Amino acid sequence: MTGNTFQGRQIEITDFSDISVDQRVFEFTDPAIPRRGSHFAIAVPDPDEGNGSWTDAVVSLDVNEVPVDLLLWAIAKAKEISGL
Image (cartoon, rainbow, N blue to C red; front, top):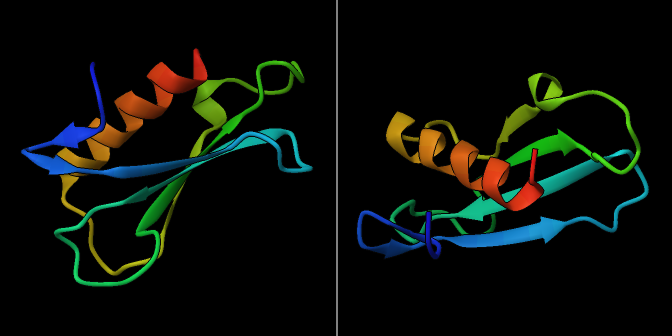
């Protein structure tokens, strides 16, 4: 997977790896969703902490709906970036 382009749109990904919990959080913002700010986030266990695994990851939605294909792409991107 290369870049942050999904269906021709540049998706903004903010990587919070310096938060004070044992998670790494990726926030996703899609310009096609008409709302300011991040639209959803994926939190994965920090592999350096040794706690949990990818099956412990969670998705948090800041909007009512996110297309499934975008969410699947984002999950794959979070896996790629996190190295899990």
